[in-house]
Amino acid sequence: MDELGAVQHERIEVRLFEIARFGAKFGLALRPPEDEDDDWAIEMQPGNYMAFFEPWYGGEYDT
Image (tube, rainbow, N blue to C red):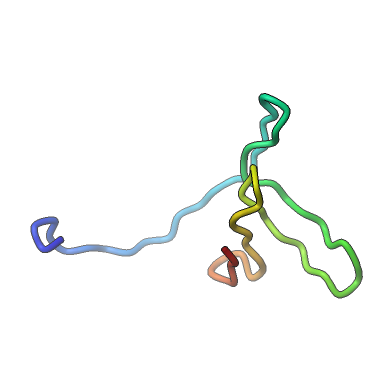
């Protein structure tokens, strides 16, 4: 890693997207709350193996 030199961390921006292929949904999909105690989330699909939560600019995520 030292050979790569100095690293500069910067913000990135992404957009929600979904595409259906082969009977599955792929993308970063918005998931509305399922009940009043739930929060909005953005899920990596297929499989919902990663989800992001507010605050969107650096908040929580779950794998």
